[in-house]
Length: 445
Image (tube, one colour):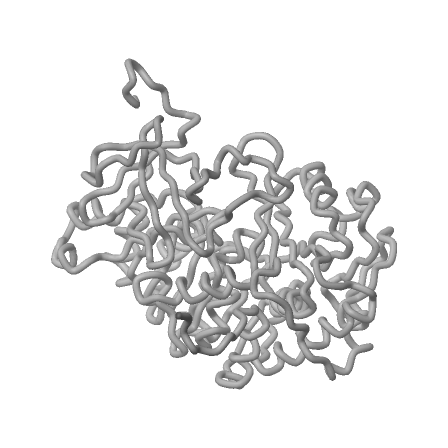
């Protein structure tokens, strides 16, 4: 017997619909690429996202088309994201930190038909656009006054392009398993591999990210996603933020300590997420200027192992909670987050830092295990390490085009390529990448 509950497809546009209805006046702040700070609301982003969708459809883009973005974290980028997904097309975030030849290869592999590009990256795109045979529309994320002279074919200023739509548009409806987004991982050997997110996986990941022992955001928070949207969906903050109605502060292209501090201070940011190098620059700036962090309550640090010195500095000198996190593009990306379970809350000093140095425990929706070379599960004893494998509703089951099939098994487990151990409390700690570990006499060394 089946249950009698309603069918309600988990579609990404419902996140921005909810933000508009329940948190419409909540502010979204962005440092624009042109320079000035721009202020808008979830209601306005919703309205403009509908215009993006309407305009894309008028240009002939349809369900399943891949539409790239080469852009920093701004309100325009968010509008493009939701507009693309709203017609059933697939947003494809490109990492500008890759070599131009890699970006061109990725765009050709994905068969991107259009691209939204920030002013910063127009010169980069000019170098490679001729090699991308599927590309037929370029939308530069600026207005007419700032539109540069360009060799790009079929290029138009975003605001001018958007003005041709009135927003009288209804989101398209489709199966929740329809592809919503695409991101290529460069953390593997060989050519980059495409990860294809579904609407369902994105919405479920947004819910996972919002759990108290994950990102733990609420509508009372002011969140600064420094981690780029091209870095595994800004760790889901572009979706969980609207879902729970947190004020979003988008940093644009400036990641230096002074620029990040300015936003933290003027916008009274309570939560932020970034890689360790960003926090090193901020802490150095604070050290040099003597400034404090009166509003910031929590930072999530991932993308690389977090040095103990950063954790200690934030907590001891600025009373900011540090959450060490681990994940992968293939996981949407959250895998584990290191908050303290009750048995560890009273720890202090080095003992506390020992726990916080671990990558943490997985939230509901992420299963993990470590195995030996014969795929036998290993004990959670905090010392027996092996291949780290994961599965869940926001974990990839294959790569785009069938590449890397050997990393997925018949039971749905994805081999992360990491070597790790898990302790009796469920805390995981990565010790190395499998390809970098040597075996001697059957033992990892």
